[in-house]
Length: 449
Image (cartoon, rainbow, N blue to C red; front, side, top):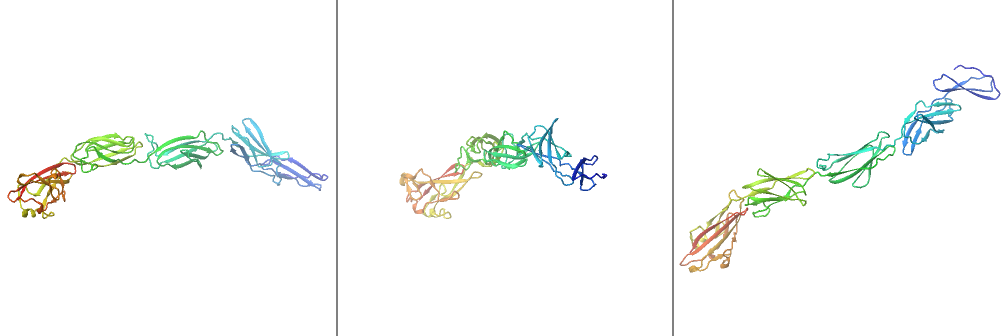
């Protein structure tokens, strides 16, 4: 800019003129004081900063960077203007660097004008802004997903709540479980785990400016990760030594057990498959025709969630009759005190002894006996009760002192009858029973002299 001299004025005179052609809006200040002439100095007028708008539910806050003349002089004021469509409105005139506005439902364009005297400088860029009146939208998912039966088959599934917001952005997501306390997490998503049972989850989100999603959304998950194994198996006719040993001599059976309530039950036995459903109390049963020998059944239960569990009980059909052999006495033999004294010596002493077997069967379970003698000269029979002879013991089976095989029962020599002139007729009746309940009887007739 060229300099020129101005005539001296009385006192101090300030003359301001607009200088055209500067890169920025500028004004020239010509200052003279006390001299006939002085140099004129041009001062630049930088523009204020681009406005920045921040939204909230109560209004819009607009701020900007201030400006001063290059000479250091402060501006007189700032004017914030808003344009919506074809309408421009002055929002405020202030010396501050911020101003509040009401929220606009359409896009508002803000500019800031700085004022010094009669001159102004406008922000180099405007701020286009629209208030966020729209709440965010949230969604929920669970992993693993709900299956076709409406269950989540898992021991510890993960739930994800996420939200989106196209304007101000998601501020937080919130949820409750079964009406419990609210959990709020900053950000647009949250993960949490569930245990076993039925869970009702209510969830919603809030955006940055405070719009809350309504109505709150709700979902119910049924979670189950396992089912109990089937148990308490039984046969309708368990003829074995125990009512729960699953050993029987009856082929046609009702096979039953327990499982989770309403579970599906599949029984596979000897190539045959039977299916049923457990009752509300968990009981179930199927009919089976057992095959000879010990065979394993596979019982598989499936609950409503699709979880499975199984057990493999052994079922044994035994129709094989056991056998019993008497080593002493031997049928048709006449014993004396001397020969009786030598019987069963290796088993425990004078008495009765022998072996039993249940080849390919369930095994010998028990051996009982009745030992009787006739009275002298054809008198009434008497039976051995384990210690002495008594008429009332006949027809009552006595247990062996040992067994089931080899077996032995003590009958001392001095307890055996002596015939003196005539031999005494004796009879031993043996009964052997296997574990399945099959039994057989063997009768040995002998004499004692």
